[in-house]
Structures are given as structure tokens and as C-alpha cells.
Length: 243
Image (tube, rainbow, N blue to C red; front, top):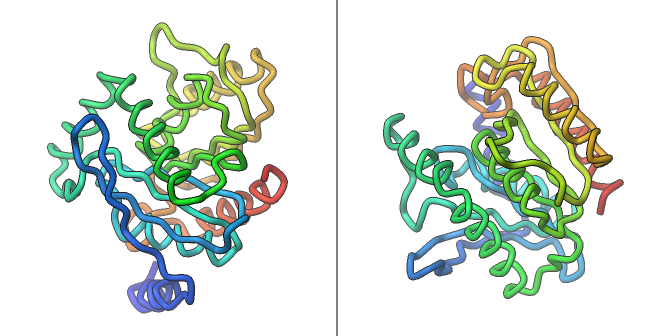
């Protein structure tokens, strides 16, 4: 996205009349800080999980975009309050710790849903959506058997860890992926399709030609405007059908 267009986009999101707020919460004695914005008291809920750089302005922009569409949103924090890594080694270390301790990952997502419920949001009418690392986390939560209406990944990790499967999984699935993704292969995309089909889980899996990993992240070299707009449009239509 060109710098001027990006600035205009950020201004449009930040000028939303439905202001959000940071929400501190605690999990197993450690402080976390999510972000919450509400369209109205009874709106469906979207829980968002961040990429490997933590909960940043990117997730806040997406939150405001969803609120403007009429959804309540809680953006979860899986790293800890104030932990927003910049260096690649730090990002790898934080995500690696959670990949090694998947029960902790599940516990953190459960805590995010509980915090959303404590805020008065309807967790019984909710979907979970994640970007990159957050997409892998969303599927991890799905495999736990979580009672959530749907799970969404934008250029997310799709591999199923050894010893896991989708036998207990529930809900619907939307997988949005770039065929030029050099991080998550199309073979992993195909294996996930086979797993979801074998468990008779309702799923829609869409690919975008020429789209690399992180194709929705504004202002980066991997951003692809066409794939971003098309995937967001598909996502919003899927939300209407699911919630």
C-alpha cells in the first residue's frame, strides 16, 4: 500500500466513532493486555489473535474495521502486557515457547474468551480469527474441541502437530491463503483440507495467486492490495453467514 493511502486508511480507522480501549487481565499470575471495542450490547463477537509481533496497531485497525461492520471485538494478547517484539529472534522465541507449550496457548485463548465474557460480550455467538501465528493459534484452539461457531486464518500456520487431530473439533472453518506463501506450503493447505473433510467439518478454503505470507499486512513488502481486499470481503460475508 502506498504511504499516502496507508495514512488515509489509518485515519479512517482511528476516527471511528466507536472508540476501543485496552483491557488488562491476568493469566496464571502474569499480566496481559487485550484490546476491546463494541458495536452494541447484543452484537456477535469476533475474537482476534495477533501475528508474531504481538498485539499492535494492525490488530487495532482490524478491530475497528469489524466494529464498523457491527461486530463486538476482543483482540487477545498471547505474549504479555507490554511484550511487543521487534527483533526477529525475539518473535521466534515468543512464538516458539507457545508452540512448545500448546496447553498454555489454549489456556491463554480461553482466558481471552473469559475476559470478553466478563466485559459483557456474547461468547456463545462468536468466531475466532487469527493472522499468521494467530491463525495457527486459532486452529490449535479448534483442535481442543472449543465450543466456538467458527475459526478463521489469514495466511496462518496450517500444520497439525504430531499426535493431534480434528476429532474433537467443532464449528465452521475459513482458511484464506496465498499460493505464493513460502512459509506455509500448499501441501500443508491440502493436508488441512483433507483433515477437515475427513471429520466432516464445514470449511471454505480460498487461495490468492501471487499472494505471499502476510499478504494482508498494510505497509509491508508482502502486502498485496487485491488479495487483501478480496479476502476481507470473503471474510465479512462468511461472518454474516456464520453469526
